[in-house]
Figure (cartoon, rainbow, N blue to C red):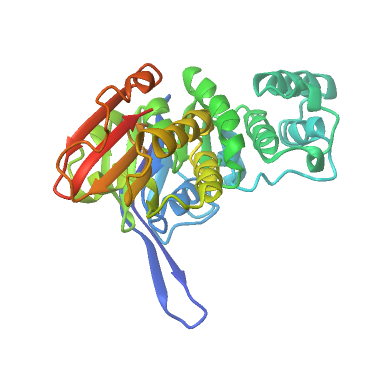
Length: 357
C-alpha cells in the first residue's frame, strides 16, 4: 500500500548549518497493518510520519501510495489527504465549532456530503469513541483525553485508508492515556491501516502487527512485536525496549519522611499509568517499614516498573548482611496472599526482599 525508498529529510538552521533527521529510510507497508514506530527522542519518528502525508516534503527519495509517487512534482496532495488521516499530539480542534461541527466540517467541505448524512456519520463516530453526550459542546469544555478522541473521530470522518498517529498520548495527563489507547485498540481490531508513533511500549506490543525501531535517522530494526521485544537483533534495540523505571529512597533511620515516599509513589504511579498499584504498594511499604523491618536501618527502598513486561515490584535492600533481616521466618505469610510472588535472596551487596505486585 505504501512503499518508501531511500527517504531523507534535512533541515537548515538559522546559522546555515544542516541537520539530517532522516538518512535512508526504506520500508513497505501493507493494507491492514498496524505499525508502531518506537525509538529515542530526536531520531526522526514524527518527521517520518509527517513526510508520509507530505506535511514535511522529503529532501530525497520517494514515497509510493497505491503505486503513485506522491513526492513527484505536481502530485495533487489533496487526493492523498482524502485517503490519509492524521491525529496530532496537540489535537488541533477548531475551538469556535462544537464537537459535532468539528467532525462534520471536512466531509461536507471536501467530500460534499449532505448535512443529514454528515451529521449521521459524525454521531456514529462519536458513539465509536464514547462521546455522543459531548456532541453539542465546544472543545474548551473537554478534557485532554476527550479532545484526542474527538480528533480521532474527525480523522475517521473522511473514510481514510490510512491513519497516522503522531504520539497521540504525549500531551495528555497520565490518567487520560488509557481512554485514548482503548479507542486505537478498537480501530486496530477493525483492520484499519495505522502507523503510530508512540512511547507506550506495552501498547505498541499489544496492538501492532509490526514494529519499527528508529535510531539515528533510519529504521534500525523492523519486525513483529515478538521479535522486537523478545529477540531484538541490535544492542540499541535491546537497551531501548528493556527500559526499567524506578523510584528509590534511602531509609537511614526511623525518622524518615514517610509523607515524601507516599506522595512520590503516587506521582510515579500516575506518570506510568500504574494507578491500580498505588494503594497496594502504599500498604505494603507501610507494613514492611513499620512492622517486619522496623529497626532495620539503613535500607534502600525501590519501586520499579519494567515497561516491556509490565512487571512492578517493591524491593527492600539491606546492605552488608548475608541472611534475611526478618526475625520471624513467617513474617511475610500475610503478604503472600495479596501479591504475585516474594523473592528473598542474598546479593553481592547484602540481602534483598523483592515483592512482585
